[in-house]
Length: 182
Image (cartoon, rainbow, N blue to C red):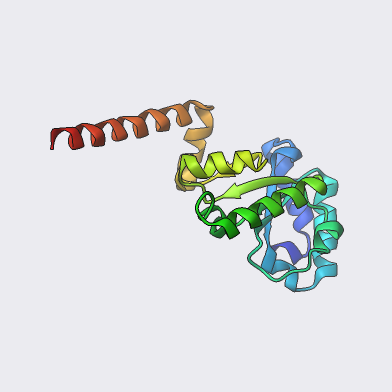
């Protein structure tokens, strides 16, 4: 919230977009649900100014705070991220599955994109997909990496993901071979 409420944030973001030649729609800025407990009017003004630049606004950790659902209709959001605490229970905890299903349905009714965060297994990714969640992030796809590695990953296009999948498959094959030997 401190960064969002900072005077001149919109100007800073505009300068960065111009300097990097990044298309504004390619930049997503995340706010946490807890940020909405502060000065909502200032937050809304800042978010509207950022939206005017064409930047995407994503509400992070959705479902873990105690914010009003009314914020979803008053703030210029593009997407919400289903908190990992709900994603963890998908497929084996009926309540987590029901909550995630409700979040996805509500987001779709409000024309918001939904992102499942903290996805670690194919089962979680599959469950999110079955519930209508369009995007996911987590260790299943890639671990957090230092900023210096991002440039390398981006220069490879989707090649880094293919490399990761191949490496992971080789590790799984090696683990299976070790189990077969014993």
